[in-house]
Length: 65
Image (cartoon, rainbow, N blue to C red; front, side, top):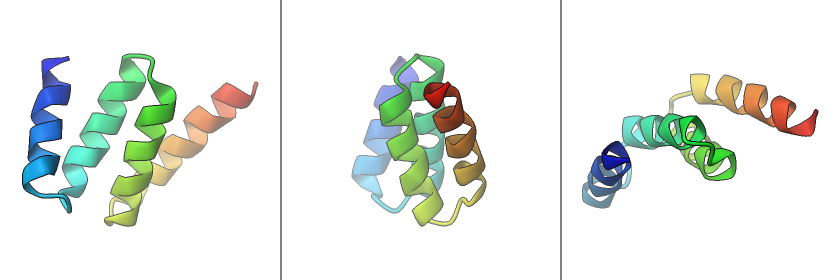
């Protein structure tokens, strides 16, 4: 959970820090907060980490089942 605080601060300092959104998204999913995690991964994808979309697809498919 302290990692989330670090990613929040990193994003606050640099709102275009794609890796921070990506890692915060993965952390959120790991903690069971899939919706917030998917939002962060989507932002990471918008900022250029296109592999984030594959993770989103995997977790949205799981939620639909």
